[in-house]
Every structure is written in C-alpha cells, then in structure tokens.
Length: 120
Image 1 (cartoon, one colour):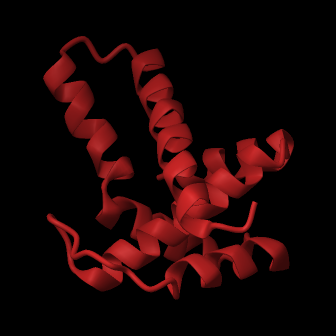
Image 2 (cartoon, one colour):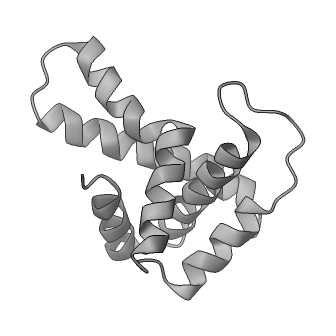
C-alpha cells in the first residue's frame, strides 16, 4: 500500500482507539473528562508533538522516517479546520506511520510506538 493518506486515515483510527482504551483503563469516570484527556493526544497538535518527540529521541526506524517524510510532504488539497497546515502535515505523518505498521501487521513495533506516544 503506497498511498500515505490512506495509511494516515487508518492510523488515525488505530491511534484513537488505542488512546481511548488506555484512558478508559485509568477509570476516568466522566465521559467529558475522558474526552478532554484523549483529545490531548489525538488532536493534530498532540500528534505533531508526539512525532517530534519520537524524532528527537531517535525512536523511529529508517523505514518509519521514510513513511513520515512521504506523508508530511504530500500535497494537501484542502485546508484543515482547527489547525495550521504545518501542524496538520506533521499529524498526518504520525498517523501514516501508525497506519503503515498496522496494515503491515508489524504489531510488536506498533505497540512500541503507541506506548512511547502516550508517555508523559
């Protein structure tokens, strides 16, 4: 699968389910509070921050960096609603990595990236 936007679309869903599961397991009782916590991670801004931390810590493989660059540099045909284009592109790149690992059934590495992504 070569379409990085399709990978990002899948990665967005995988990441959101993972983050929701983690916060549900923390027994946050109220759904409003749960949504507030989850949004910190699944928003474009949150994902861009996560990706930059992964890069700063040299956590990504060469293959993952290639996917990231392809997604980040992909021409966007629409403007994002709630963020600037740069943040949007970084978030898309992060989602593409997640989607890539998931679609290629690299579940061990996916789990490593997901766990690192939500560390404070």
